[in-house]
Amino acid sequence: MTIPGSASGHALVARLILAGVFLYAGWDKLHHPFDFASQVAGYRLLPSELIALAAVSLPCIELLAGGSLLLGFLAESSAAVLGALSLGFAGAVSSALLRGLSIECGCFSSSPSLVSWGHVAGDVCLAALAVVILLRGPGPWALDARLQGASPERVG
Image (cartoon, rainbow, N blue to C red; front, side, top):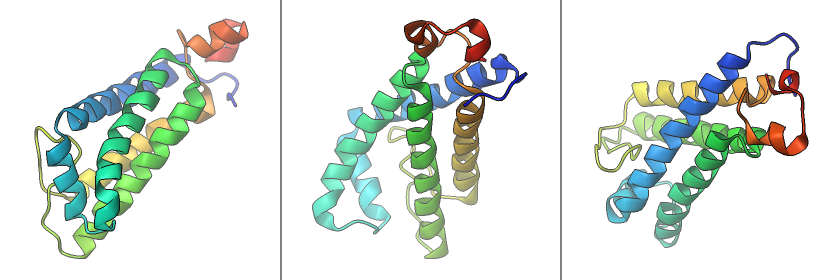
């Protein structure tokens, strides 16, 4: 869905920022799997049997959706996945804070920081970027438009 008259530049900037954050985060987690698994366990939200699965699958989802979004391929679907992840992360961090846990957030495994309401705000901002993409389309230079043969007006 695209809002007529919307600025395609906003969608492009939202797409690039959201993709960049999740590509970096996914790459970092994939290269530090034991650190990330420990951070996932610290939230005390999953049974121990699912921690390894989450620690492997989340970075893969972040990389796949982030790369797809960067290219503008299945951009709205990728934005929806990353927006949902962002809201899920905001919920997990909020839960940890409300339970008084002093744990590493797990955002970027190689540069850990303790959970804070700032992390929640950052996750909500990432979800808002996803909404921009969902409302305005992927913006210019999206592979979706090329594959569908859409005119430049549809893209932004």
